[in-house]
Image 1 (cartoon, helix red, strand yellow):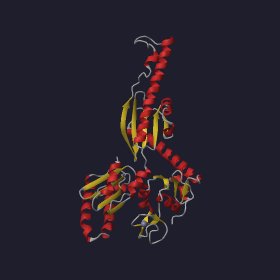
Image 2: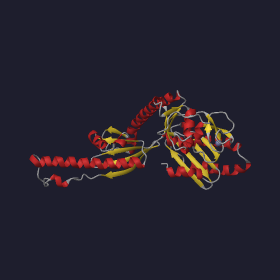
Image 3: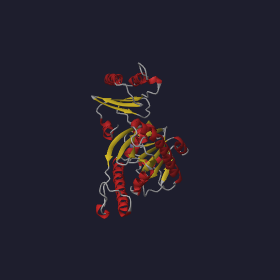
Image 4: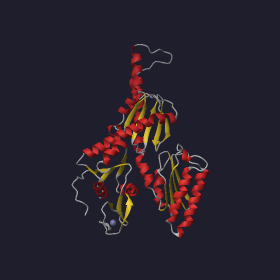
Amino acid sequence: MLKPAVIKSLPALAGPVLSVYLDTDQAKKDNRGLKPGYLIRLESQAKKVSQTLSLDDQEPFRKQLLETEAYLQNHPPRCQGIVIFAGGKRKEVFPLQVPVEDEVHWGRPVLAQLLWVLEEHKPYGIVVTGRKRVRFFLYWLGEVLESQEKEFRLEPSKRKEMGPVARPGVRLSRGTNRDVFERHRAAEYAHYHQQIAERIERWCTSEQLESVFLVGLAQMVKAIKKQIPSSLSQKIVLIEEALGWVSQTELLDRIKPVVVDHERNREMASVDALLGDRRNAVVGVDATLVQLQQGKVRSVVVMKPLNGTLQQCVSCLWADRTSDPVCPSCGKQRKSVALRDVFPDLVRRNNASLEVVSAEAGQRLQEVGGMGAWLREFETKEYSAFA
Ligand SMILES: [Zn+2]
């Protein structure tokens, strides 16, 4: 799985870098066989790139390309898509189980598509509960990874209050002993649920999980959810089904449709809220860009795919859709860029978060230009146009 630290280190790769994105989906016939389609497409895209390069760049480019091709021949990808950054002696390879579109570049590492993929696929937690053991899975980028398995012991939490419990061999069938035993069990379970809830809470925060799917017998998952603080409990989705010891593949098959459904509903609710709020939100490409670059945006919602071009300042990086040849902020020269290529970086530099919506929610957002944003607290909608 991708490590955030590795992604952060990519822009620092020394010297010119070969950036390669390839659709290697094995479900596509074209990508199988002796000379798979992705190798042919890599070759033809590289030829186009090579025609734009200076004489000095030709040889290092050729070298990285040949090495990358050799790598792909020796390690045929078993994933839906692959992303490779190759420069100097360093090569970073990211096999992904989500769709990737072909791209080949030479120069600074081109991260936009990778950043989009990360924004689009937030990590989810899956917690499969049982009577003695709980399994924790991370579901991210189309993969399930068992992150920990924890045995929780049923322990008496308030031993003193409980009084004598029957000795082994003595039947607990009637009278006070039976009541004491029942109370004892109830207290033990409450403690058990509490421990699990605390662990989920810590995990959710440390991994910045979008949601947690809590799987198990109705009685148990409901009891655990009750112990989770209300600020977090909205992230907990119950799946009232005893999946016990199913394999990871079976678990993924069972969970995937629930996650897709959950995502669709969340996206729809998010777009509805955005469109319905005239005070704390802005909609449309121009308004969003201005507010975002003035640091007033907390979170941006965009539809996929995001098309269009911007003019961006080569110096301060201010970007908008006006046709001014010079930057309105610093007066330097501007160049034309694809919105899709610069947007994730624009969002990160302005400390906002990004939510990507598609399908029905995407269509609704498209009616207002495909983009909107939540303003930070205390920012009102009355802003003066950027001057
Ligand atoms: Zn500027």
